[in-house]
Image 1: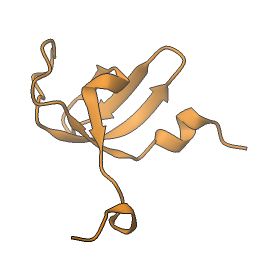
Image 2: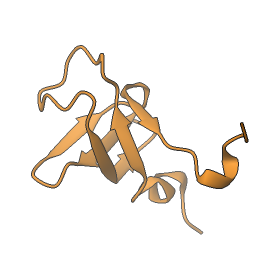
Image 3: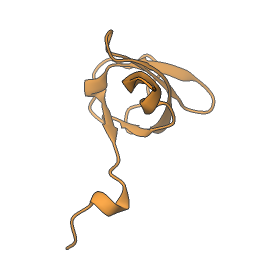
Amino acid sequence: MENKDDLLRGVVVWVHPSLGIDPLHRQNFIGVICEANLELDDIYVDFVDKVGLYSTDSLFTFLPVRNRSAR
């Protein structure tokens, strides 16, 4: 059985555009989760050229098309 950390691997995320502290300066960038440890609130995001460490509250995820409400 997969744990919740494994289920996050490969999820596309968007870094909060107003994130105050970001050593990689990737605010408003899109990346992919390559590792996660929810117990420690550590989310590693791959940006092709670098990998950054973020907390869950600094990232947005995208809803699949089927979950968006019709307009």
